[in-house]
Amino acid sequence: MTVQKFHQQNPDELVIDPNLLSRFDKPGPRYTSYPTADRFVEAFDEAAYHQTLENRGRQRSRRPVSLYLHLPFCDSICYYCACNKIITRKRDRATEYVGYIGREMDLVVQSLGTRQTVEQLHWGGGTPTFHSLEEMTQIMGLIRRNFDLTPDGEFSIEIDPRTVNRETMACLAQLGFNRISMGVQDFDSRVQVAVNRVQSVEQTELAVTEARQHGIRSISFDLIYGLPQQTTEGFSATLVHVLRMSPERIALYGYAHLPSVFKPQRRINEAQLPTPATRVSLMVLAIQTLTDAGYVYIGMDHFAKPDDELTQAKLQGRLHRNFQGYSTRANTDLVGIGVSAISSVGATYSQNFRDLPAYYDRLDHGILPVMRGLALTPDDLARRTVIQALMCHFELCISAVEIACMIDFRRYFAAELADLEELARLGLVAIESDYINVTPRGRLLVRPICMVFDRYLRAAEQRARYSQVV
Image (tube, rainbow, N blue to C red; front, side, top):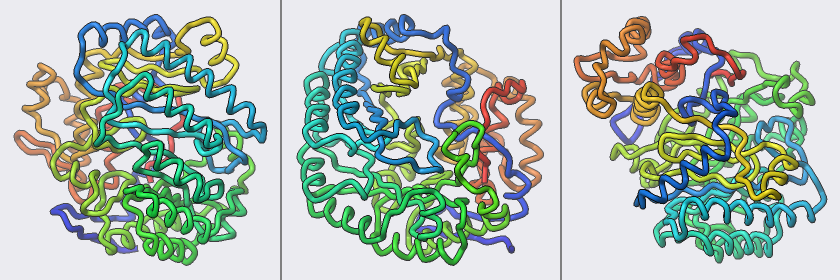
């Protein structure tokens, strides 16, 4: 396979060198946070999170809130899925859950203060549309009772096209959602059977049509390469269907096969997984197809149309990365509600208990259901600043980091800069007097570039198994 250049409508371009991709195809964090969630500690508990929220409320911070709700229930299991989900047909479990997230919201607001402004709202899962229309209306009522949603906010929800209809879309639009995200993965029937998610083109297209007819302004598709039975011919056909439906955003993920961590993946026949060479071919095919069609490469695994808010945020230097991926709302504190939900408030992270019994037990006792978290040190903050800049902008201004973090960059990161020289010789980064730039050749390998600045990895403090970089 030869080196390929993919030009875009902005000054950036991508260069894909299969040899380099193979060389750096190793496990690594996706850096939706730094430090990553596997570094959280149980010493940061509900008392620490309560204090964090109270401090923010006491300071009367004007920073708006990004609110995330985790709704974990699904009708059936998708074998590839690594999300925290609960497979059930018992609808009363979802009804019970709504009551508990209402309790958690009340506890959060007691600490945080009432009427906080929400600029960004996301319902993830699981499958949020597992809940009935009445339950979704009840959940939105809980949110509006406790928070002020801005008129120009971004309010999104993940849906399963197999479980929605015209009435569902009408309800979502009435509740105020203006973005929807839906899983597609691959339309090839052999792939769908292999991962236990059979979803027709017609079902997906109908969901897209209904969403647009009800005024939902932005649609995002999730695609996955590296799934069992996947071929370049089949994935090419999938991309043709995707482009015809013309979603505003596309997330292109590489499948992370970690059966020792995620039990449903044990049902996947490993002999049907594509070879490393085919996996690279699938990624190259998707990037070529999407960029040729006019989508802008945002970073890592995200693409968006040129006029999309995500693209504009990237061009204007406002792009941010959090636990939901790339975001346009950098100046927010993330508050997570629900089982396993993660919050990022000030210089802290916290995560709720990941199983329902423990989550319910804490709320039954009137306690915030925090399982673990982290108070970031000055070193964590400096490294987070560096990693955010590289992940979001492919560029780092050394003097800006020195001013923000009060460090002598070249002295503080002397060992990291020495390691970066090897990446510079390979053409992945360009190190200048006041800038570190990720080159077009290095943009698809930004994860291993960021890993150079990860203190925990440098200290070989392995805790979790990460997905492959490619």
